[in-house]
Length: 211
Image (cartoon, rainbow, N blue to C red; front, side):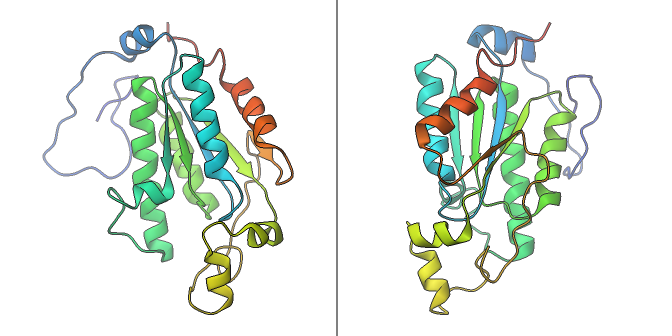
């Protein structure tokens, strides 16, 4: 697989395959009137990641910027449906999602990834995949406290974990490695509207069409 500079992409590759180049990124982005990017939302279950990502998607589309939310639960209905929640499966979940997001970004779409993504090393790998292709990657930490996430508990996961029905709950009996240098931190008491404005400010007018 070759990137923008014509070099072989790093990472896992099947044997006996060749990367077939299509239209250049420049032509795709010019046709869309702007560039792609990935916004990676990380935080505990119940932090508000998907709510904010969906609101950003709606705002960007209203501004004429192609955007698509890659929600962790949605991806587990298909692409990642064969994965569980062990550490290894979580890493594979992130790896697959990062590659999909990179394809979206290269196509000129703003990929809005909403995953707990508890491991810092795996988030760094996702960033590296984008860096090697010259694609913008924005890490957004929705830093809602475990106590507030448990109070909200929109999916009932925290309650199930407290009852012993669910093992490996991130933030309770499994670790969460907070980002050290995210592009943006959104506190749990911030409104969705304010959060959207801060993210959109980073993206619009957005990455310019490559020269």
